[in-house]
Length: 285
Image (cartoon, rainbow, N blue to C red):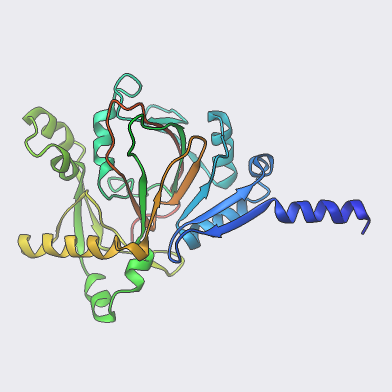
């Protein structure tokens, strides 16, 4: 090996560095933008995503087309309902006419509970910070929360099914909705999902969040008590990473094994994130 080869090898080794953010969830990655866009680290990133749940690329400053290109190095890009590759996440209706729907993002959830195959991962980049504070994003590890359950609870919960719907989420942020709005949300339908998702890898995670209405075949009061108890367990500090955004940050998370929520912020604050998504690769089982 020549001196030039050795120097190149050393530079490559230091161009990709990781740091754990919480023992149970979250890894910060420092890497060269060009290398990320080339796909050089794609396999490592995919492995880390499954292991750590949340990956943070501080101030990587991807433009929209770069974020799309990076997403495509990791799997199949999932487009939005109208075919957009990049989606504006904001409560500002002048930027996103469907901003009201995003009010549900202030509560713990995973994306795609109305779909047979939910998305694998989301990637968010920060473009504008709230002018008056707030707007951090929290993530919790539902793989780890399941792993720490007592064995007898694991056996019992694996038999349970839960009814999910978007109109259940509506009642979190609009407890007295207009009938028209309620009917629009109910028209989306509902879906019965397992409380415990048995993944192809052999791992298991809890399927919870603000779309979860009730446990099928269980007394309503006991059903809601169970769902709240499990949500509180899954969102204990040891399972949670809270990201305080800087402009240019990119955060991606494994949607099959985490829940997330945005912390409250002023809808008129200008906060703007841009999202791309990786298409799902396995159904709820």
